[in-house]
Image (cartoon, rainbow over all chains, first blue to last red; front, top):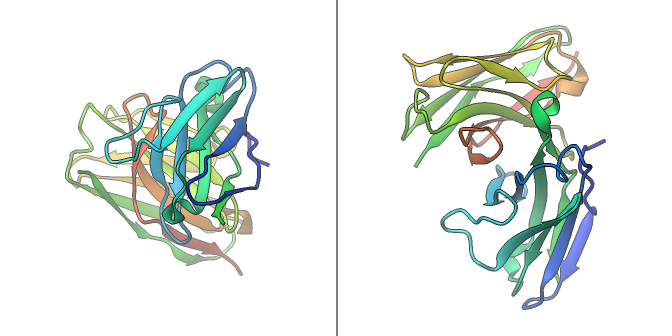
Length: 111
Length: 120
């Protein structure tokens, strides 16, 4: 059972936008602006896509954006491309006792 | 750009101890800009934080694994390590070594992962 809740799947057609949610509690997402999103292709290591809710590392397309409202964070992928098909995981800082928690992952399918 | 490479692991028996090393290139484990961690992923499952360590050698552990995990830093070899004792089948996973930001809230760079299988 993951600490953060993500939908198991999401999908969209090329060119469309899709949003993936990540729901936590007041002890993690609701209290800290330390939400990250990772992309993981099958058999590969995760790759950082968004950090501190809405910041993009160098090299990540601006089609990827993040936001947060209350205890829920969201990743939006605009202008879907075939290479965006992957698994996406969210994480959040959860305080000094629990530290870093993750979501169970969302499989994004580009139709 | 940082590169991380895990070594060790493979097939272990229940109750044995797992030892993993992570060699860092393109940067120093003694850098003040990073912390160093281990994160694992069980088959078909999500990610689980195990532990992280700062350059001062002070470790932090996932409470659920704290009694069995030990993370350490070897600045002379520019690497960090993980030991996990009393293994069970539930410890079967891909183990990633990861560089994180200084406050250990963001996993910047990941190793390719090391498969660990615990089976009798």
